[in-house]
Image 1 (cartoon, one colour):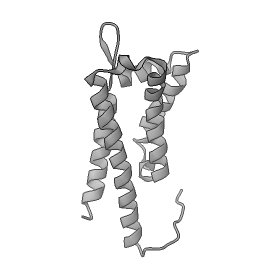
Image 2 (cartoon, rainbow, N blue to C red):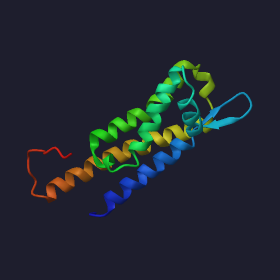
Image 3 (cartoon, rainbow, N blue to C red):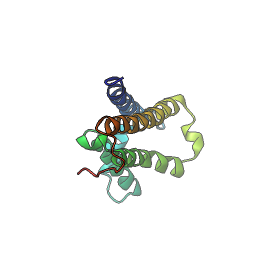
Length: 141
């Protein structure tokens, strides 16, 4: 059990990021992977989508740093990654998102990332208990 939770934690993180990259936004003629949309719109100046795209890219970048073990940073990263998706869902009619190439990767992303957050909390709690079980949490920078 000692090595099971950290291994599963990073497996769920990898699954969630891969599924985030596999979300397809349907266009008039072809579908566009969501990560391409994020990168293109990040450089489309004068558009409100640019803000959300930059937040989404920043959320992905946070997942590649050592801060990912901090529970609050993990939750903020999840919110940042969801913000461009929620923005698109609000701006475009919901009927445009009724296809499996959008629904399945989005569902896998949300479920896997939430599982990653839960496993991160469990791993933190078991690590705290094995280090003497202090009742007062300490902040680490």
